[in-house]
Length: 260
Ligand code: 8Y4
Image (cartoon, rainbow, N blue to C red):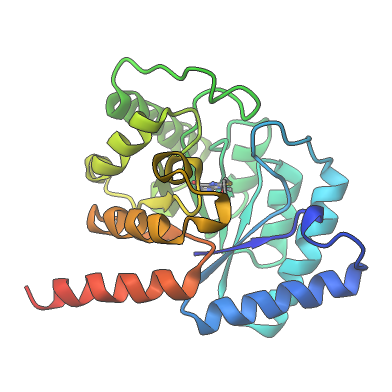
């Protein structure tokens, strides 16, 4: 899964068309590099980021989704927690709704129950983006996250959403200390108990930067290492910025599996 950023900081003075052209060129490159899924997000979940209005999020995400589906055959994932954005995304051919709030916002379950086919990524987060990194605590990290998954899967099935549409993601960096993030990475295989595909988002995150003392643009080697570990734990989808390098690394891992 390649990350496409459509938050406004990435294009300061370009108009609507340059934004879409820029996005399409990025998507074309990520597909050429081996991405099977493109994740589009119009809201920043970074600590301290401003809330984005529904109108702004729709105007950032939907034109890009439409343009991608017109030109490419690729699964598009929409990173959103807003039911209106989810509904519009589904209407315009999104393949996955990627919700870091796991459909806990009002109206999300209903919107997703109206559709029969779009896949849903349920991500675990402890707390809220603004304060989630202030001393996160768990009784037992893996058990607590498993309990959260159980509750969200039940909420989905009770709302009429088939469990077969669900993808689980432990949410690296979302309310977890450095040690907790690495413990989670080492133990991702525990979540296979749910018999659902697992997604891992680790690319360029603080857990890499802090461990290695690297700025955000110097985290490729660390990111590749985490991608390999997640894949070895059985993660089916890896969310990354550097598609070409990650696909190379994953092909090397895959070659070792074929020969067993
Ligand atoms: C540098 C680059 C530093 C990126 C931090 C970040 C996930 C996700 C995000 C994830 C799923 C991010 C939308 C945070 N992370 N969705 N979204 N899983 N499913 N931070 O781990 O990339 S945004």
